[in-house]
Amino acid sequence: MGKKKKKNPSKKSTTNPKQTAPQLKKRSKYSLLAMIAGGVLVLSGAYFLYQGEKPPTQSPQLTELKKENINLREKNPTLSPQMFSGKVRRAYAIARTIPEVLDGLYCYCRCRENSGHKNLLSCYVDTHAST
Image (cartoon, rainbow, N blue to C red):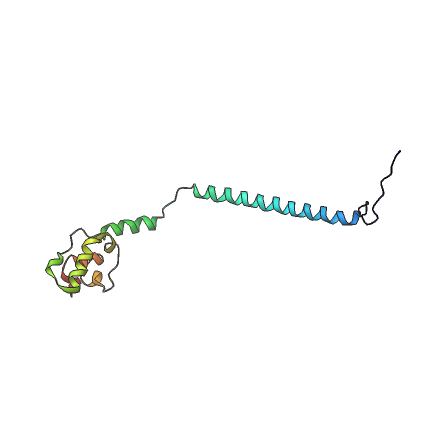
């Protein structure tokens, strides 16, 4: 009537408690580390978002430099490239197309100190750039 199942001797039905205990400890260590790392990421993200919301403050030195820079803008137009030939004509044509770039650059021939120019664009307002 009742047939009994035979146990397979190759399979062990009992588990060794020593083998399962270290696995549980490893999992708990990794999950604890993951939770700490996640918390650090959340806190650092909140910190950087808070830092980005602050309006930038201007130092008095920066304000003074901006005022000086406004005084160094060239108000006169560049000379016509038709007055020149060769590479000089090309340089004056380029100066006429990008005055806002040249208006912010310092002229390294020291014409600000020697000729009273304001910036590199000032060289193209007169014939100084052709010499």
